[in-house]
Image (cartoon, rainbow, N blue to C red):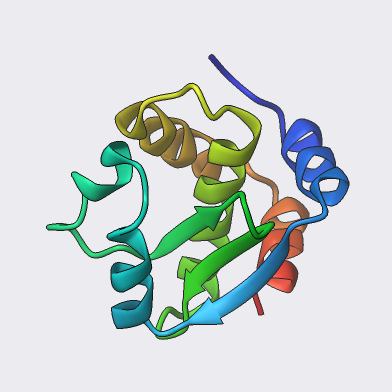
Length: 113
């Protein structure tokens, strides 16, 4: 199940979500209240979290700009395709990151800075 960058951009811009930079330890605490799909990844370093009830995408404050942009891409994929399993979202994130133009990645960097 693939997505285009245009779908990613439109999906985020139309969503009304706010991006917040939150210390990683706080994100991990917030994930404790998340669905089981998210909780099973608590043993990995959580870098982002989508909070649909609050229209917030949380991104770990400690990440550099490139990591924030990739994490934002990952969370937007969750937003657009909530039915996708975590491993599918991660695979699509890696695939899309490798094919983004500098301008497209720059747009994500701008949003995540």
